[in-house]
Image 1: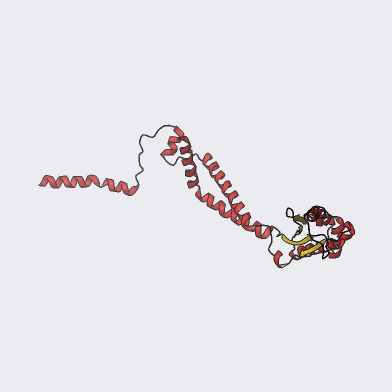
Image 2 (image 1 turned 120 degrees about the horizontal axis):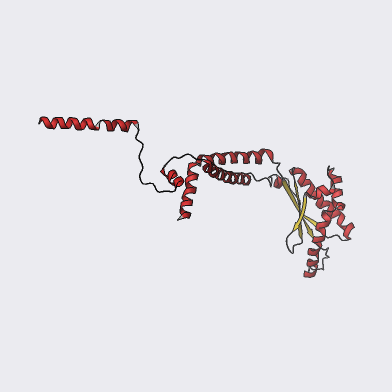
Length: 248
């Protein structure tokens, strides 16, 4: 029973402060839109694919052992791609104003489990530059890996394309606006109950019952001026009716 009363009280407070929830929702959605579209810098992503594969002659065939060796090599190659040996050459050729270490923070090298294909993923605030860095990193790695590992087993499967990288991956405006709206609603509900806690005004009999903690026996309604005029005409009507009856 107490839980039912608490639930009723909750919805009563929400209903009373509904205007506050609507106001906070509008303000939160507006703030989320401003932050997403005008304050946050969009981040673009470009990716290229490389294949790690042992060189074969026409008479040779693939076997599972060699494929497993190539898969294990990818883990080593992932570290080499982000090493200064590769990225220093990338920054030099592209004339980037960043250090190899800073460039390394923009690059991720991933591959699926038991796959010979590695993905070089570059994120940056400039889509065209992200594409150039991804493609240049792949080409420099392919050129330098025979010197580093004494083996030529890297092929570029797919280059990064500018058209595929023009849509920013973050921020997500709709996600941000949704988060702002939820936060606004939470704040509005909390603020509504705070106002209710400090509100000492008595508006109806329910407020009196809650304050005094005694049941209400009767309620005297408030009579407005028009109703009062209507009541004042009743005795006159009765008197007139009585005079007419006496005359008969």
